[in-house]
Image (cartoon, rainbow, N blue to C red; front, side, top):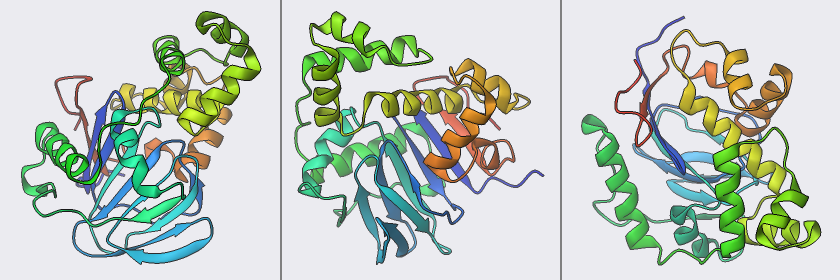
Length: 255
């Protein structure tokens, strides 16, 4: 069943953003960090079992959450846990799982003029005024992240990656979790799901997308999507609920 678009999904290589109306969801666990802003007023957010009302919040990677947006349009972003955007905002949490934030004036995107450029600029301005310089990432961990993005293997070869950066398997696993905030295996699942979104186009089946992204079967993909979003990508993009813009990935938006 097709809908008039209720919002736009903007995709970049290291994060994605949504502006529009979202469906309420049950507890789920994003592997990425969450940026959540109500454009028309407050919304309800549950983190680690506790509900609160807020107008803007950050949630750390791999923390259980659920969202009740009510009637407000949302400005949401899922930030890769190794991205400079997240690493600039991370100190705001003070080591906690979630924090309410106050956006400086003139940092909101303008939905009537949505484009990759305006949405990217809104995020850049907000990060510049709220955050600071990105927290440094160990160059060995950065190299592992780059390898996983480039190769997108079916499984994580911790021993092989450790050999590439001169670390034992146990030391790499510990350092990666310490620096990025999620285990290697979970980080790879996040990259695979990003690949699904980046490769989606009308007429393409979920089984095709799952195979291309390196999931070993469709049930694995479905379990991962439900665990990360409480929804399948098809429930938002294949139905036409969202318009899709591949910012930095492709020059043309999907209908």
